[in-house]
Image (cartoon, rainbow, N blue to C red; front, top):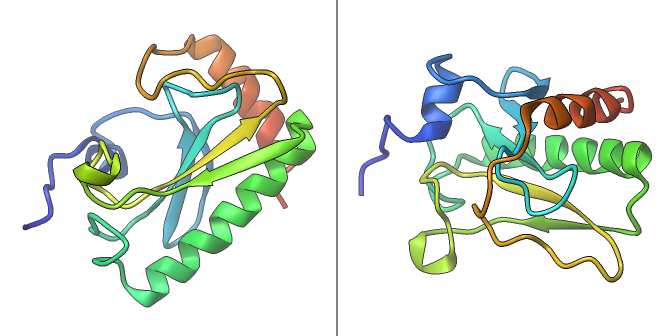
Length: 139
């Protein structure tokens, strides 16, 4: 299947849709998930056009895991969750809802259930506040 250049992440990369940016380098972009499963849920995407891990270049995969680790460390330092879930899905049958490779970084807390994926759009003001806390800890 050919890569869909009209998916939401491709539009974000082209500047056609907004996002709350956390971190960007030459190969990756990280931003807040607007439909978070927990407070502080963020995404890491490659700038290359790859639908799944199987389509991603080795260089893109390495860059994504480096950025994912950097962002997980920033979330841990900023929000102090006892756990952080890293999730990545390949294909609709596996739960992938946007056909562009991405990692989810999801803070987890004992006794707090995750919100269902895509259940509700978060308040932009709250997302921006969380983003500033996280950005302050990116190294």
